[in-house]
Image (cartoon, rainbow, N blue to C red; front, side, top):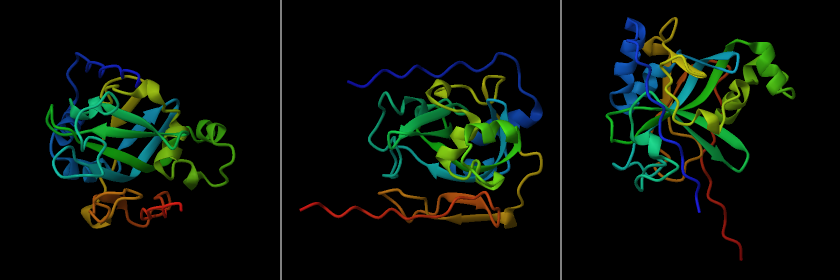
Length: 220
């Protein structure tokens, strides 16, 4: 029996500043523009801040078989159904956490997976969490590494990212120019694997390597 997932934490009562208001509007819209707009944004947790350099967009039940919400609401994916601006954190391969930013209108599931980032604050803290890493560019190069560097785990599920909670999302200090945004197929998904909904900062060394999903051969 699956364990019930706690409901999303309520948003803070105070009104956001203009930059946060613009970010909130972006996240409340369609998932693909939201994903592109998150490039260059800052995610902070556990004494570490990363500049987001790679993301993937996932729609909900409307024709995206790669989405965790493709078959409808479950205890695991409930937060994906809104409201926007909350964290969808999930466990994968029995060992890794991944964090997504919920987007879209309330009641319609979609989210942006944060795939990679550059550690811009708290490098020593991130290194302490990932002592085997030799290069700083590899500290958050990949969705599981990003969560490990930031210390993000199940406790962040449903948290409001635009408030002053333990995990905070902020707009880019310097927006990424449109010409510097590259797009391509998502990594390692079994369905809709050629949909070009992965976006990254072209040429950035923290972007993860692309690996297309290869189905395992059936055992005889």
